[in-house]
Length: 154
Image (cartoon, rainbow, N blue to C red; front, side, top):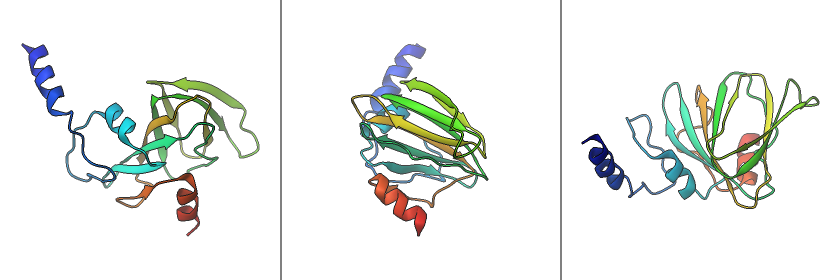
């Protein structure tokens, strides 16, 4: 009986919302892997609440998230599809930890840790990123990494 309920529920979820759109702070249910595969932007905020934010990322082949540190928030990333190299360190000049990640791997980055993710695969690296507290304004969309950089500078 439960299995039939799940099948019915899944069939209702095949029509994903159109992107870009930020569905927060309302309650929201979605198949994250399907949503990540549908996102063609470098970064799209999917859900922004008062204390948490979820973004979808699409890193092109040979592209990077970019070296960064968040002094005031923790970050959780999940690889939905693709192959990446995660670089972590206590300073910009000592990125001494590296890990391979692929489908279904998760990365936990505490505040104050420098990090970067490089797409080393032959397809886009699609990820979900969770910030606590939120990092971007509600409805933020960065079609490309260059848009993200120019937004951070302004």
